Length: 631
Image 1 (cartoon, one colour):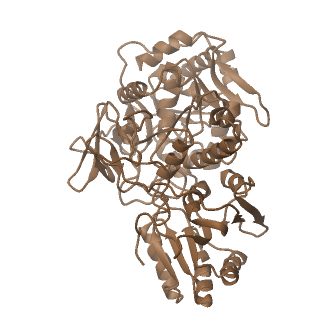
Image 2 (tube, one colour):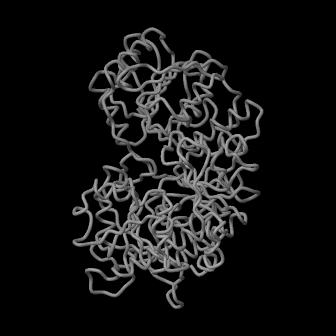
Image 3 (cartoon, rainbow, N blue to C red):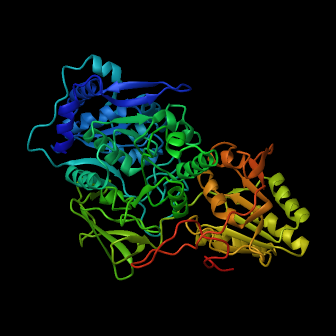
């Protein structure tokens, strides 16, 4: 971390260099916070926290400070204060559930909150999530900067390695997620999802430094001049690397306006003018729609979508579907895509743009400080030069759980001769199912009865009874093929059983198909689909639509159930180019769209990457691939 501190010494007293910019709600302006302001505020916060070192405990290890902040300047100065103190930061996402917060804050000496964090602490119940008599320090950037005793001070020599962060561990094999974006297991940190059986992971400063060195070797110099914080706060790479990489470039963290939600973030990108940003599945889908619109209107993609001369450096995790990545690359928006775990200091491998640096269908090659191998059963094992430590809630210094020094990811994979890793079983997410509204079920039934579609395709499974209504329509018509794609073997089996008990088992096929493999099953007899039902999570809507479009014909009806009529999907179907679309005024939000334009030209089939295979871009055309499940 000495390189980061050297950068801080270089820029700390620069009053003209912005360290954080926050967009103003409903305006094109931004509030700028300089290096001088925030580093001096961090000095003041560190002095206040130092009074509570060792509060309520006997050991003399590093100070443990809980941090509950939103995406605010205060979250940045809190990180700088912890670095100056050589403290262990127990960072709690502001959207975490009370159980997650309690597990992360159980052994803290003090807790830092901003206005957002203070409200969350009240909502959780302060006495329910904090140790007895744990002091809470309110961070206010303006007040701290005004009362600072002087410039920022770095730590003394000889204190170069300590557990600098504690975060929830990742999902392991056999666990099921809560359905929140980015979740892979119970305890993801989302509201209503507690810490469950997840261990706490201690990240050492040497592990973070090794990660930073590896990442800087892969990215262009100055890439983090303007780092837009677009990924969720719980994303490990955001909190483990983004701020430090920005500091090393003398750069600035750019925060969206407080009123900017996930559904309209992509519309604010030209105001943020990022040089680097993280990409979630929802944002990737939105970027596809924006880039398509720019191409159709004859505008360059970079200034139209990002407000920059060149496309910024975009990076994402394995949760962004490969079809979306290929589509972005076809539109001139390449993405650094990789795979990571908190236990391995966040990032294990990365695909990088350029000759030989990326291979579609894989999560890239290991970073320089990481080794990987496969177990006898094909499980991916990881070993980092400076590994993180697994901590149990009752023993904050328990050390690493694995006895063979290899991290067991719980994910099966293959590794080709060039070192590229392909996940065979990517972590799946699970969303809670809700009964479909009566009027929506009636709408789906009558669409089938009146249109008599030869082929009906569905994706999702959140709206219980939606597929049943389609199957009843096909049964009563005496014709038509209904194919339901339901992510997760357990959920697919439950749907099959429900259809069978209702006497509809022969009227619909149910396939276990997640978003990574949607589009591999042939459509109707003539290779087209007449009716599409999308009842998946909102961030997957545009991706599912994009994959199924090659099957569509003019007149194909698309019904999206249970999402708010806004965001990237809404923009896509209502831009007037390919669909006529309207929302229905029913209790469950429904968007009904009719395809206007012909089927796009077929693209080359997707071929899994291998040592000598060439992977052409583009989604799988109609009829390519095989079934992802059985009846």
